[in-house]
Length: 292
Ligand code: GUN
Image (tube, rainbow, N blue to C red; front, side):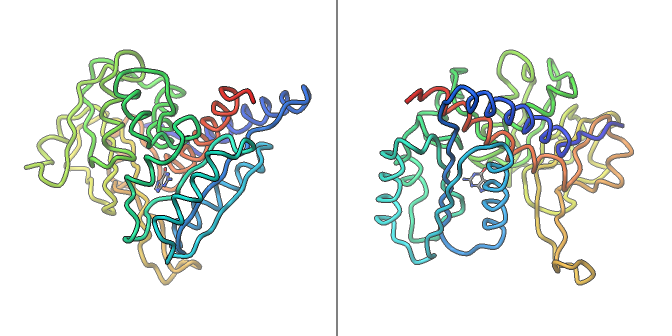
């Protein structure tokens, strides 16, 4: 069994990006600038955005964090997005999700200039992804592809089962794994809350990508020997013995499933750190493509 070490690989990628940024600086070029907008005070979202901003500093990017109150109206947020679209100093920006209920998420994501949409959530970019065109691949699916590639995991002709059909992970992942090329060329089954007898499907999977958010959902009885496991779940489970009062728990019963797996991502330290590294990679790409 091999651990797919997202912490190590993401560090390697950050070092590669930092070297690119150093070259830009040496040539007197502008360095990439990422902005992140967060609406409200959700603890998990603040943690993620904080890590994204710190990672920017680590690789030499400029970064701007914009915190808006949870009472922000849709109109106010759309105005902020227009400002970021028009600001030549900003190469890419993200709107951290979820947004408060008074804001229409789809309307907001459609307002982002596709050339600055480093999350890859705009319909134009998502459409390009589905058509095998070059675009910003959403950071979590992009991170999973990169992990599979760097550990040389065979995906061609394999049965990949994706659990969860979210716009951020499950849906794009199902498209990417069925694309021509590597990683890809898989036969994909996309399962979701209305799937009947999921255990019967997962037990036939060569590769399982779980993005459900239900701690320890996938058990050893649900998988076959030598399965490849990608665990995207990051749920905060209350735990009084932990200093933070919670532990981050994945969708997979790691202790028992790892005994049957050929490759498996840990939680934490698997997919999570890869997401941030690939957001940085998309921001670097946005900078290179803008050339202003
Ligand atoms: N919320 C959970 N994951 C993500 C992500 O990848 N990007 C943004 N913007 N919000 C998220």
